[in-house]
Image 1 (cartoon, rainbow, N blue to C red):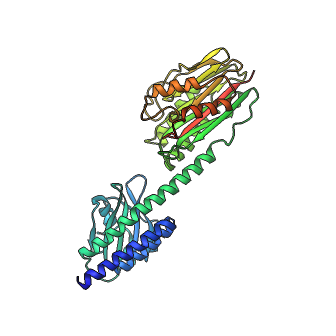
Image 2 (cartoon, rainbow, N blue to C red):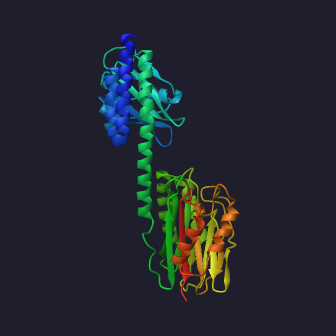
Image 3 (cartoon, rainbow, N blue to C red):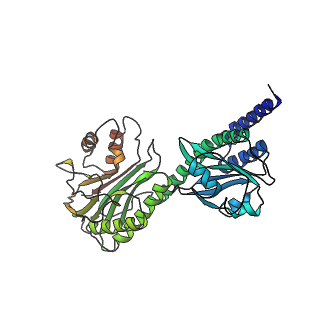
Length: 402
């Protein structure tokens, strides 16, 4: 074994040691800072930088740096396919360059800092590119195949650690955002009893499910339940915007179909690519009738004294964010004293191993004209008796008191 082999083995052991330790105790920022310092040492480089792919997948953002902190401080962004880092990302292959100017790099910081040579490798986890790791030298050097291998090993260790930390932060932020947007308890409304439940999905984590109850200037009561497609922080953010917009449109009209039509127009204009299901209902000031419109959302369950529970035959319309050309419709219903309505999201009834009709049948069988809190408790126990749901669940029960 040569001295070079021994030195290379020692470098790999040092890299292994720092990553194993960091993974168990450091957050994203500290983890990246520690690993970038180690990457500089291993490759005898002057700078090391991590650029992560933005949510659109079109740009790289300088996220952490050692020796080149100005890139992070200035929020340098590099389009995928342009410049040095953008080329590494587009090709998903290592790249070394020995000329740093406006023809080879996008970031002016690299030129200002007199970087003379650079080596970059893709950061890939789960088969997906998440960013680029690169090092730079202020004096001319030619990076070797061994340098490329070592930097790629570092990237292969940094990528999953970064992804795991970001996912954890994303989920925590999404959960905090969603909890801040959902009412902590239903409002007190004379003549109505209400109860709610919200449970994040075991498989996908926090998503875009929401419920809402509010009084309107006309004396009517607005009730909404919805589900934004997707999960994580983006779904929670879109959910918050949709929920706020629905409230605003509800102030202008007591027509649920009109509210959802306006909401659909807003989503097409300002949330391109987003899709959501929703049901919006307006209970009239006397509490005797309720008018509903559904946008691709499962129908509520209705039960009343002497009336078996049933899925309401509400006229279906397309989900929000799909096709604005088709009109939306309302469905009216008498709400007798003791009548109970259960609104929910599809995470309650959908299971991979069973058809949705089976889940709907089980749900209907679990609903009775009882107090809303009792209804929610019974329904959750019945529908989740086999374990946690894969998708998140929002549940809202409304009962007109006798």
